[in-house]
Length: 242
Image 1 (cartoon, rainbow, N blue to C red):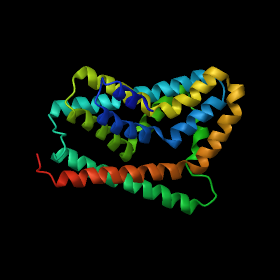
Image 2: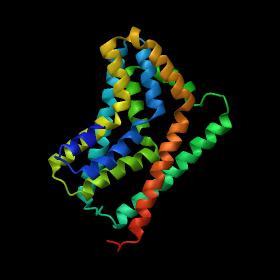
Image 3: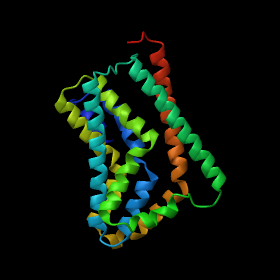
Image 4: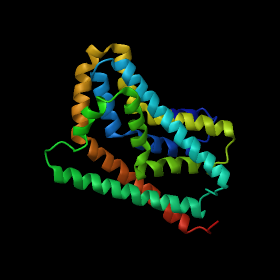
């Protein structure tokens, strides 16, 4: 069970909202580029220092992005209730972006055959960068893709629609960011607790598996979320616009 779902089951926060945001967080968190970079950092020199800063950079970027979007939403007084123009438009645009991503990943993997994905050849060069430059590049890659921006915007929109207090918004933003980083935190925690020598074979296998199947999983998750957001958008079109 994710951090968001656990908080909801405790009764302190709305469970339906947290369930939805858990799915968005895991979709954002499954970034083959960031996972591949983390594996290479953990397999390289000073794994805990470099890997720790990398995970911290992801958390900071996620918290900052959602906070900025929620703040903008409050400032513009955007209505994000179901059936509103803003929410319906965001749902349909997000569905289109995720559908395009899923199809692109499927077609690209099919065309590549047995060749490794093109992005894997760039990761070694990225890891050779000075750490501050690598963290800056990681933050840009985290929010530059339209599909991730839509997921962050959808997260902020769900928070706005729930009409929560600022304290609850901040707590859910933090929980969302932690949930989105779970796939990064697990290998980092394994190295921290067990030592890099014991975890090295597992990291190598995980990296190989990611490079071989990461695109297919991204495609599957994207298509599932595209279907969900498309259904939400179509449902919103059938309600009186607000």
